[in-house]
Image 1 (cartoon, rainbow, N blue to C red):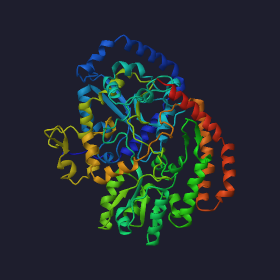
Image 2: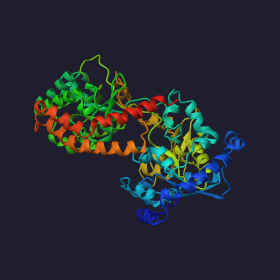
Image 3: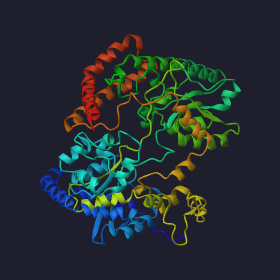
Image 4: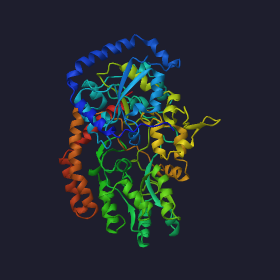
Length: 565
């Protein structure tokens, strides 16, 4: 194994980088005019250079001749920081540099960053050429198109349409009739260039739902629950037979939990968001009658001790541990957690078996509409800064990462030198060597992968790898159960674009709604506030805090999304 350089000062270096950036002169607004002029010049040059796109089509990977350096803001795995000072020391990145003729400099947020580093980066006005993040989509007023208008981001639309052969091919071959609506904003600009593409194993599946102890169902002659009455019967039976926590819930602000809306979806409402109805009208979930019915169910379960009071401060991982150690009979999980639980549960109890349950519904033949179905077009994408001197090379580089051979390289490593990372079978599928799976130097699997593969540059998850990761029968059964009579037709699409003004106003409204209603929801569940006498006042207060205005803003954004071509 080649000697890996220790980088114990990696975190310190990242913080120093942030400090230097924060001290640079010039804000984003001050550079907007000059950067816009540069963008217009570059776009004109690109329009006159159509034949240059043939480089990618002919198979050439050269983008520069060592005379272009791209600065990149992206992830840097925690495990790799103990060995590399930045991602540039990764052998895959070095191979990419050799193949493309590009040089790279990296900027990474410190470990445990909550998004503050990105805000510092924006405030400095001295942005890197490329940024791989979802924060423009989720936190910047007006999203990507707002940042383009503000002179923060470069509008890559013309360059992508001209040079991004691989990206455009992935879009064409996606089979998604709405792919262009999803990658573009309301102004028609491409805002999700380089989004993470999913292979067939992952795409169009529900990855989150409820799991239950199958061995306990067998022991008490129970079937896996489907209706809410079924769920109540199973939980009561567990309670009567000494199960400490029949259902281990988590607090409602856990992202995966409120994105998939277990139990609440039975009443066609989400945990804490704005939703659609059959006619495409937007509603704030916590003002709907269905939400009262959802709270009524949880209130009854709380009275009977079928859920416990500690769930209000529990994470998904906390509840999973309770399920795996035999304290709980049911919990919320991701398909990967299913795989983990099969092993962890059996280590505690050799009789441990689990199964995934269909999303609870009122009637067995109902369809629920509130669970997130995975899609290749997601909130993450590569963005080029408006101040970049190399926008064309930046676009070509991101598209290079979508070359099928390069996607294999980032997923499996270079396989060069003494440390072979994979073997290739006759059918073209690959398997990791023992150097990865049983490292001779005692490095764990995740550490080896962070050192010899390059997840931050992986534009598409590898099908062989994903299929192997979810090979267990229990994983496949989870997709069948959670996807049964379940779609996301009543959730607002994750591709809406708000204007700058709408973003600011809606953020303020959602903050007010959450500050008031999060606590009240728990109080209703545990009987500290009477649901029957307090509901109307609760809804009236939410409307006073702006829920109806929030509905109007989301309705306008949804209408614009539907009007995209």
